[in-house]
Amino acid sequence: MNATILDKKRRMTLPESVCEAVGLKPCDQVEWRVEAGEIRGCKLGAQKQKEAFPRGSLLKYLTPERDKEQLAILSGSRQGCRRSARRNKPSRFSTRDHTAMQPTLPR
Image 1: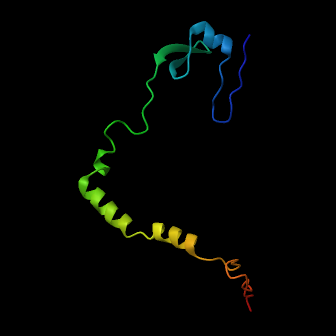
Image 2: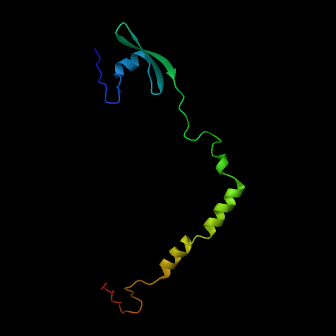
Image 3: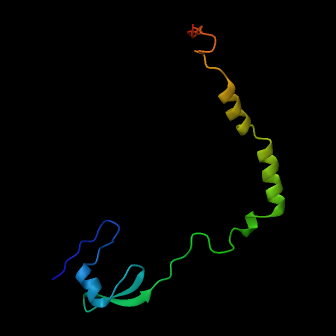
């Protein structure tokens, strides 16, 4: 006898031996019915999984007008400038002039 437990969301895991006996695989559909006080399941077959983004669904977001707008926004970005400015900026404790700057303490 194979027993299973129903969780709070009414889910259960079928025993491996039952799945192998009827050929159930992940994504297979099972039809459930009650007959004479018994629960019976019948294998229907594999259900095709839906793609997260079906082919062609994002085309409305890829237009030449939008590309120009995005490039205009990105060209005004100073992200690249900051990075190069940081590299060339001496630190507070620079060793170039051999005199370390004293850090200022907040008052």
